Length: 553
Image (tube, rainbow, N blue to C red; front, side, top):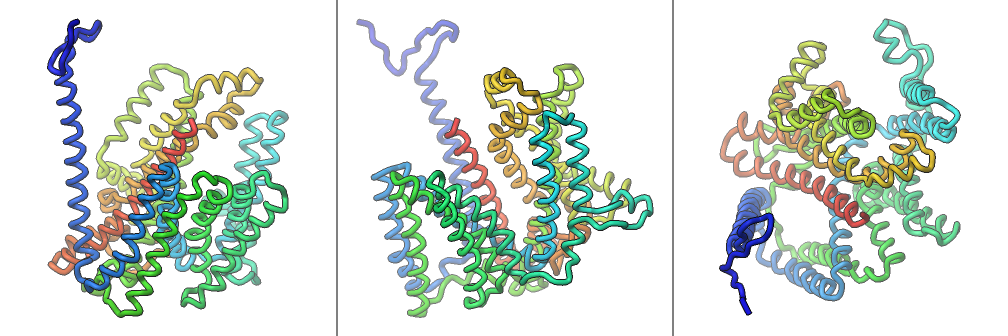
């Protein structure tokens, strides 16, 4: 009997001569390239993190305490859960990851509601959106009786009147005075309002309670739904009560409880109640949280000094200074948050709308093919070109003030718009054609098919691509420099029409305008660590959404 070895070459029809040795070499080269990239990036991040956090400046007893209280139990619990059930281990990792990411973003949300948007304005904005949204639901329920043009005009008009009143911005352009205020203006101008932290608890706690009741209670009955919702809302209220006892104002305490603590707690409770086979995975995050608290308590009691890190509370909440020891990152963080909100509001609906049109409505002709090619080319254009576009279009041609939040958000929105369109089109294209055919077979129109079939099925992929695009936008510096955004800002912008800096701009200023050993070795690494942490948090959300979307296919 003839045998073949690894060095033999076999003739396969259609492929010619195939060498197994060449295949193994190619595979090992790919593995080596991957490992090289991972190791190189890891070394770079460790080097920067060492300069920013300086772990070796801590007492040896501090390291020993956390090693015994946190590292050893975590490794033991992780190994036990992993050997028992890998799926449960993934659940535990997701639980602790969601806690870290939620706490990170809760800090940014608290910053917005403390220094930028007052709770009353936030309440007015939600009410102004709720009223036309209710009208939109009524219009959608009767869509078979109303033509699409009537539906669009009615919903767009309802949102415009509710937000701006009569005649609104369109009338102001013509010089007409405001005649009737919108719902937003009426609520924001109320002379009497509840306490700010109660408004925050109501606006954030009620939606969380509704979601938590559906996630936890499921089909257990009305009483279970009420209990789950009441417990969730009580947890949000508890944040406003306990916060002042810990030296935190009620408003940020409510925001941190609603955004940073309650969602991970609901996720863990859902696993414990509804997924008993993965319940053991909660041991992993429980050990990490308990070990962290125990280690912090032990080193505080004994008096061991921790690392003299530059990434501390003073750095995160302080304003910029000409000295490295007093330099803070707070205005830059707030500016980046406002920029990302503006980018998301401008780029997401336009990009998704363009993707839906190109995939579901546009004919396959030469014009649409030219548009496809140009969108792909625009996704690879250097970011500085978009900065020049923003400068020429918004500043020079439209006469807008340079460096504002709105201008920066619009420029960065143009930057990521091709990426959003491409990722949304790929997500829409992944919806099986059989689902569209089934919808059409039941008598649905194209609009009904897009709304009820295509968009729900592709929403996870669309959201994943949008988050990754926002991750690129938050790290861009060149477009902001070109439109005249300030490198250094000593205070948070008070609105979208004020100038704002951003985290990459602040790091750039520290490494150029304030170049010196103190800034290079202390403040710049600290700023880079914060920026990379935010990017990793955003990318982790996208990865989780992508994995969940793929697992449900």
